[in-house]
Length: 119
Image (cartoon, rainbow, N blue to C red; front, side, top):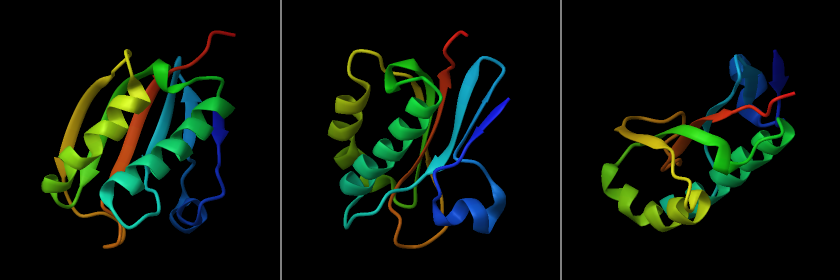
């Protein structure tokens, strides 16, 4: 098992790893991003996820499952262009959940599971 840390403030505060490689998968924790809007935060979160996956030897094309968490589901359609651009022709299975996030400033949190590269 391998644990990947990004150095984000919540990892140490809450006590979790950005990603864990185990059982043939890369499990990336719920990830938020900075920005004034849901689409900007979505793009920033995807960049953090890309970095965690890259450290594990994977890419967004390896993602098999994604969960989107939003405090206001009305923000979700504005994120769709970012998500289509990120996942392209290899879209994962997906779920969107409306819920509260760790801080009110966050408009979207993204969690993914990807296939780990074979070693």
